[in-house]
Image 1 (cartoon, rainbow, N blue to C red):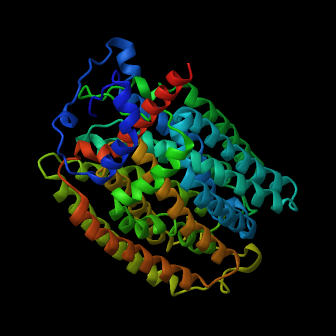
Image 2: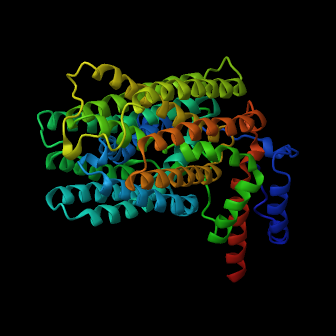
Image 3: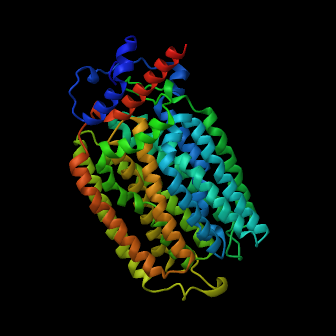
Length: 501
């Protein structure tokens, strides 16, 4: 970041508005020699160095999501939240993603003002409430409205958690480490789904009720409560130094007026982010058919739990594999971006062509009524069907990792990345809200499946020109315009305070 004169109070007071406007107009011009200075810092040694290492902090971040969203994923992956009747769970998810879509537009501003650790804590407790609601409905079957209400609260909390997560995960690594850090986070996060699914599989192995028992919900609830406390153990981002000696750029608590303006500036200075919105929109859209239209529709509770286990397990490998491709230093970053796009396109058509041949053999009306016989793990056709779940898990992890990587390729400024992450979760949630509601009202499985296939392919088509025009081999310092704006705002506030004294 550029060095600015803190001592010349007259010039700062007179030119601050012009400076902000100039930063916006000259964004990407790279005309200032001073702006290209990079100050290096010595990293701490010993145990302190381990604690303040970016990998350590990303691992702690991963464990927050291991305990909270990971348990949510394990529950959702069972289909119907582990219940026989999926309507309450589908309506809860529709409500959840509706509130998540709305509040994600403002979560980046909240994250920049109160800090990432507080944002993580506020966001994590909603998962405990949500899982507790399913425990309540298991005990009192008439409590479906409580599940829907808890979904609305979780949407607000999740917008905070995922925005803070995206900002930190993309700010801590150096440019050539972003794919690796995303892969590490995604692997730990998805271990939550793996562990939760393993617990569910073990507890429901001999179940004949076709829904999970109270013990599964209690176990998930305890794990989410542990996750709420992990942000207390994380380091202050302001004290973090990357492995190359550069300090993580942090926002200096600008005013709410400036924060709202930053949302507009982020779009105005980087309008090509709009081309990623279709990719964002579909990034949770496919869950509905996978979990309800396939896993819940065809399998009994034991097979559903095992499918869930292999699905989240394969995500670990998917994120690490695509992260390895996206971080190949012998390739230019633009070449890596195109390679990731090609891999995703091949996977999209491979798994959906495969799934189509299964989907055309059944409908929502042909499901066994009242929990009748469904496919078990010992049936001869089961192995082929479970492999489809594995490949869907690989595709999901590759999709999410690539989307974050593309955002990270556009900037290193955590303030701007927080806004991008907010856009990501908001647009993603809008898509998910719509498709979960479609499932709740009983839209045919084939309709949901075809819409999923079309939208996922379209998301990649729209992303291609953005990759071609916007992804550079190196992120320029001028891409950190929001950090400059925050710095100017801080100087304005200091000057106003001095004048009042």
